[in-house]
Amino acid sequence: MRIVIIGGRGNGTVIAATIEDCRKAGQKIECIGFMNDNEKEMNAYPVLGGINQDSWKNLSEDVKFIYALSTVKKAPLRYEMLLDLDIPSDRFATVIHPTAVISDTAVLGNGVVLMPLTVIGPNGKIGNHSQMYAQSFIGHNTTVGEMVFIANNANLGANVLVNTGAHIGSNSSVLENVEIGKFAVIGLGSVVLKSVTDYEKAVGNPARIIGKINQY
Image (cartoon, rainbow, N blue to C red; front, side, top):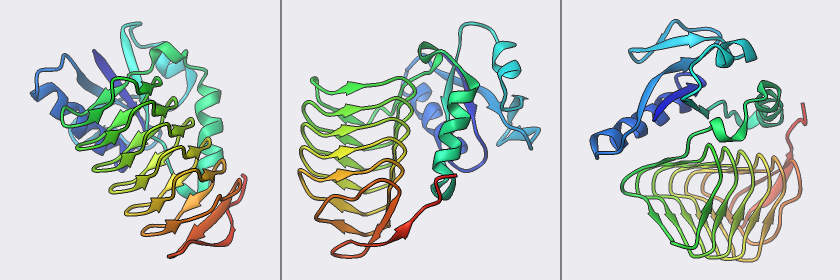
């Protein structure tokens, strides 16, 4: 499987490294380049075009994509950019690091990336374009929506619902049966004991609401 990453030197290069780990472990997978509006190359990978419909349509039909444009403050805008590209869902690859542990009853969407040592419990569901970074954990019967960013060492308890575009910060924990609203932000190291509504920012232990992100 040949993959083009839509993004830049931040999350995009981390995903490229994960793809390389998969290749070295024997998976038939490789990153062949990036789509990016500002660079000509990315860690020795070529930039094959800008972030627009013409660029992806000019690539071979066997090429798959990963969407790596994820910025906390601009998450709603980045989600709209993804939709505007109008790439068919089946053209997105799902990348699973060889050290990831996934229950047989878990369900993964298209465009999902699972980094080293991630764990998904029984009946967990991960929506399209969501990413789990190293050593993050999702408990049983937890549902993660589309384009959710789960940072390293984050821990989601059982029966949690995380809605579209939310950001779960590094080393944070979310108690079971809690709901995280769309595009909500959980700050690093936070302990979330109750639900957080759409666009809210929650930080601390226990987590408290400190404001909202801009919707656009």
